[in-house]
Length: 354
Length: 100
Image (tube, rainbow over all chains, first blue to last red; front, side, top):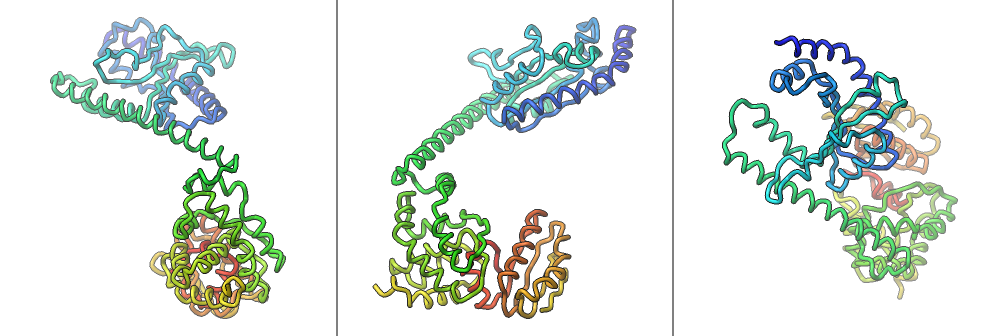
């Protein structure tokens, strides 16, 4: 090893503790900033270069580096986003948190010719802002790579199979890599487009729920959740709870989605009408059972459950439909005896006499 | 009311016998304490010999469910008689637990 390389390695050994400190500081600032902006990333990783890795780099292209400061990735950080749109958001956050050396930073995404595909990543060379930490930390540069999960996958596989290799990779294999890169870029864009479309759909549905145009809102997991925020069963639950001054405990209503579909309810408008039409009978049904007990704890789903039983019975579904409802809620047990008991007790209620 | 807990096939099985009413709830709560250390093992509440459950019993069952979920365990109820299943249905507890 020549004297120049040896002196760079010696300087690196001295600098290592500062690099470790810098890594912790920069990582903490990034974590905070991403959290504040509510941006979830797939991974945030960092590493201080190992001495043997630096020695290898100096071996390969040592003449390029006059001083240790010329090597910008002694500390490297990598932010991996799930969606391609988020790479630019992350970049904006990085530029707010750190001082970016724009001359040295590279957007590899823009380096490709129109007809070429390959390594797609955004590289910023950064420093902690002057005065925001000890001078020996603020003077050090570090590299932040920002890319999507799929770009990362491509990069890892590309690195694993060829990079730093002494063997020249044949053109046909390079072409194959590039074809895959092109495909992944397309998939990245499609995932982003899908996310945007889903967000638009959710916003549209929420606004329809808010404006009360429930007949236009298809019953789905998302719209059901939004609808539940309007607490449509609260009044019925309170009426039922009043019978025994019962406590109402939270319960998930999600398992009722297939039940509502079984009952033929396709829109939130259908659900709203189902509540309006059957709430009084559901109350009577619940009371006829609870009033002769001292049960003073009820699940939040009690109103909805009775509504479903009443709706099934009023529409001629009989024992089979009640059994089906119970099967949808509890698939791994024989629900027939319970369904029979529910139908038997309901037989005396006014809505069954009509 | 008599409660015993055994480990069977990697699950913690609580055999419950008698009437789980308000009077029995305090002792049963103590007897069920070991279930809090389930550490990821699933829990089975064996109700084959359980004759009756009151609101206090339902609260105990809920406590077991809450503690188990926090540790990533599931709670199954098995062998409930028709009266107890009716209590679960009346109170809307039908879909809170998994039955076997």
